[in-house]
Length: 125
Image 1: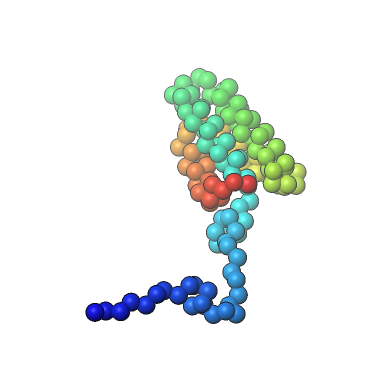
Image 2 (image 1 turned 60 degrees about the horizontal axis):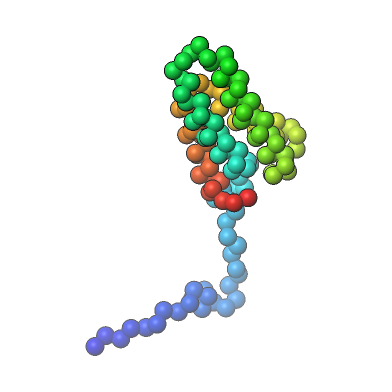
């Protein structure tokens, strides 16, 4: 009859004096995420709201500036209040998110927003 050993705990396998390794920061090996996940989620939502207007080119004169503003202004506020970014950094991030949202197809904003959310790990902040 075979005999089985009881598995030892990971601490006893590593040794009593082994250092404790802290969990990785959000963003994996790339370092901390430079934006708040709410801003990326807003980008995805607004990009999908304006998807219906993609086919009606005549309304682009309204939808492009509105989609830019509806993402850039809240992103600035989110970055300043929740991430505690400087004004300059928050403006640059808001401009980036606003320009991506203003592209008149949902081909850009949704994949970029989802990639940013995946990078952030969709963690609570």
